[in-house]
Image (cartoon, rainbow, N blue to C red):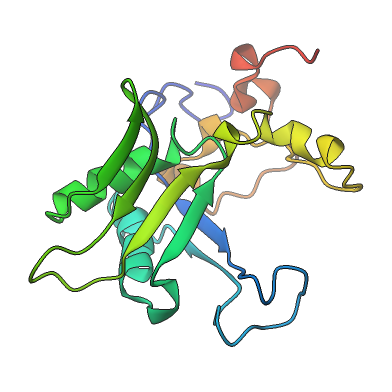
Length: 186
């Protein structure tokens, strides 16, 4: 316990409490303007006090599967095969939707979700951009010569509902950022 925050609380179990998206198509990929095809270009789904641990993922899935603009959409997550897509698979299976998972051995590298007879929802696909560009997310701006952009750091050990809305006098201590798990920069 440090600064009134239990460092061990839920440290081994993770689930999304924020899902952010940015959508574009071949018509608007180089523009910041709104697009008739894409509808809403950016958005998010965030944890609310009445939520259960799966609520954010379920709202995101509702949007993916039911928003007409998402039909036949490819969803891309960097390193999604190791993290993000597993939450999606779990909730799809919970709904009785069985994705066609693309595997390399036991590693999930992508999936296609299509309605079976009698099911009504959007057909969508998921891919992992890390498998195409095998660089850590923090290295992508430099690799693509994009100035003034960085991944940043986040105090993951504070990311729990008991801490939402807390106002701190400054940045949390290093122990909240999982620094022991980080690899040294090459």
